[in-house]
Length: 342
Length: 216
Image (cartoon, rainbow over all chains, first blue to last red; front, side, top):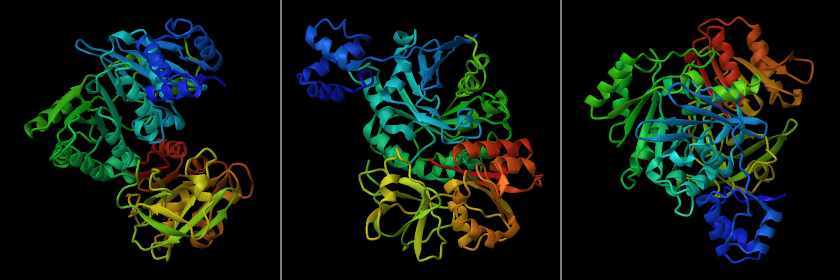
């Protein structure tokens, strides 16, 4: 079986070169070709000797996977569907005036079972490899325009931490894709101790999915609360912020009458005390069969005002791509059950 | 990744087979816990812990977990080979999957029955109902104990063998008319938890009355 070199870090490529009986610097050359010049075959690697290229062709591959479907919203948002071992993952391209963001998946399906999430309805199918995560970035037509990458698609990134960290290393390295660490955000429900490992081994931004400031109410939305309490997660972040300057944000999907009342805002302020953070208030993309309704704009604006009045920066994230099933999991779950139009 | 500083080494007392593939792993208990809580377990302080529900009673002298070894897993095959005298590392108990209701329905598949066993063995079974599911009768863990404890409030569901309710736990839940004030506690795979929760919600049970714990 050939080794796919796409998705390997510089260290892994150097080690692979040594395993082939070649000098370490072959790994540097490969990294340049694979990530800087995005070569898809060994033939084009003109500064490698012909016998080396031949050996690489025999033993290795540079596998990429093209998306099998792309839907474009009226607002310019695009939803890509990539096949992975007979299942599907989704990737969303979100263009705005000042930034072009790509939302990538880290798993096929998800184990977390959040009430408001369509991906959870698939159950957990598989972890993505670093190559499968990075493939979503480099295999879309808009790659060269991307300014930001967010790990907010299907799956829980901290439940697949090793592959996520490898992909982050390649995304941000000078020898890799060269994204600024300030332009990448990993979003999580907050798994401990994986979160500590993530903070120790990366410098990218972090977003915590909170969605309710009350323990029992959060548990009814997010089963993870019964295992890793939000207080433990917030305390960990608070302590780390004494020495760690990365931006941490709070993700908060607003559900009408469920988590958008003044009582919730007041408790949210109390919970976030001492934390350097901003709150992203997010419109809910309805999913089939959900008992939840999205808050209306006035309720979200009131929450924003109340948070701001207490010194907590809050933004309302615009809803994007609703006409193309842009909420994560909607398209791939549909693809699992009905034939897709192409 | 290292285990948290609060993790400690304990000695395995027992490691017994249960059902077709399950294991019952015990060590001497020197900590208090609330039935329904979990512990992180690892064989090596440099390996991240995996989370397991405590399955023993909170007055038992041993603490126990119920698990199914996963062939491709990093830790569970190692745990399955442990013998008395071996050492493992455990985190302090944590979690809030706690049944504080007087009347509730417990729903479990596979080793998801573990927290309910801890609750029952800690004296919290009362008149609660347990709906337990498995593919094979042998994997209805502690079936005889449940029959004795709960009598007709114990419903076993099996998909591959006869003799109990024929089908998944969701099929049983669907076949019943539940009072709208019933509280449900679900533990098992995320697929079961999500399916059961969706089903109960479609029957009109408020989602605030459904408490879930998923494996991960």
